[in-house]
Image 1 (tube, rainbow, N blue to C red):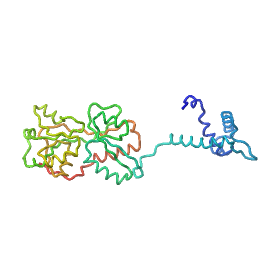
Image 2: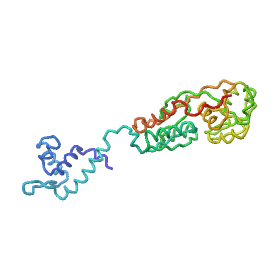
Image 3: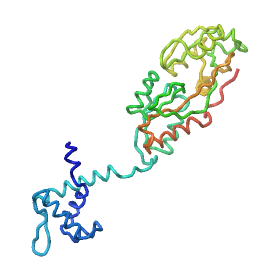
Image 4: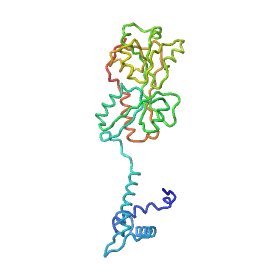
Length: 311
């Protein structure tokens, strides 16, 4: 594309050219454009000089297009349609008629994805969701930079300047006890450290926040197994004498759906600070704003799962 050539052109002449060719007359074209015949006659003269073609000629008592004018008419129509698309104001997100697919990056989906799909079936029946599991904070940023709409992550002091963050309600931690551990009695720090634990580590690694807190108190626990996916926890906890420590809503969902016990950790743990994250490139998109609103509403509403058995 020759930008320097295009910059030299009088782009106002494009509209005048199309209307003149379409109406095949200066007076009709001037009326359609709301300008004087004199001004449009000057435009026609400039266009004839530019194209080295009369464009419109007299045929009896009316004007008709030349063969080159016929050829130009379709090009001007396409060009103006393209300009209208480019400069047309964006519509608001219409969830009932949208058929978009939104990609979400998240490692734990069980306690919110079914509810989100329920809301979409009711309010946005044509909208689809594709969930991807991020491999780390750098992977989240890369995914949002490309084609991912929103990510569910944990707030950290090292925020990326290209991303936007919306805090979600903080969540304390709960311990979920595997079925063989149900009758062990009240939990103490000693019994907690003596247990075998399964660590949910979506980004990899063999130590989590709990291990850091225990280490600061001169304690350690036995992490018998590390899993990358939330779905891997239920087969282990329903058959093995293991425990896992999770954010409250994830723990409650797991316990309620697999008839497990939960209890408070025997050591003070910091409250988890979840956030919704999206890229600045989608910040003003009506569709993305609408989907983020639905997603945020689902994540901040009350937990719809049954109340798990406490211990």
